Amino acid sequence: MTLAAFSPLIVLGAVTQLYGLATVLVLGPAGAVTFYAPFTWRRFYLLMGWAPLTFLTLALAVDIRYLAFFLVAGVAGIVGELLLSVLWRSFFREPIWTYTYGAKAAGFTSTLNFLPWAIGGLIFQVVGRLVHPARFSPMRPMLVSAIAFTVAFALVSAVRLFTRPHGGAFSKTGLALFCLPIATTSVALARFCDPIYLPLMAAFAVVGTLTEYGYGRSMSYLFERGLWSYNHGKLDDGHTSYITLPLWALGGLYFHFLASCLGL
Image (cartoon, rainbow, N blue to C red; front, side, top):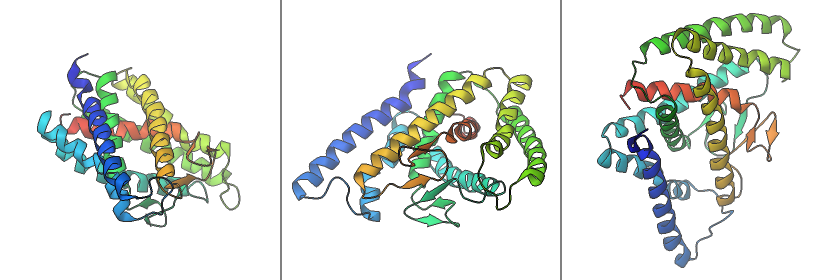
């Protein structure tokens, strides 16, 4: 394991700490409210300025391709959660989450999400490098995962068609069916590509859940309301949910492939 694999985390930590300190020094003397303040777009982007600054620093100090990854990860994250929400609503009546600010596309996503998704993509890129450090072509695992997920989802959708309760109420049985294609994808990748994909997706599940929770909980202290709330399996007033673990396993794989396509 080389220091280069940790460099994005080192840069992220340093930029976040320095930016946070600078923000406190600027807002403190000005008498601005620091915690539980009313939401404004200006305040949100001021507080999130460390996100683009992290990628700019990475591009200048580590690899220029991090600028491309910043744009790709931010857009891909929004597209990915839209697709996931559409699939979820084919199983259940209520959405997975409800956004508080900037909700778009029937609440499936939010206009605030570009910067958080970009940072999430960066963290998944680092996890992928640490667990699966060997350089590889993502074409074969991308093809295997796409086929495995699509076939499995088609099969469980047919089952769900005959077992879906009236009105599409949420149930643990329905959740297990919804998550079965994710498990199928991990097994197919381990069988046809590399066994490392099993622990890799497990790591994505844990890291993704903890990162999202940490971000959501910290932002709930800075604004008078949290940025979102989960609608099922709520933990800590809906800031997170047990249903996110398998979803992040798939989401981490998604960003891992995107980073690999860019050579990161």
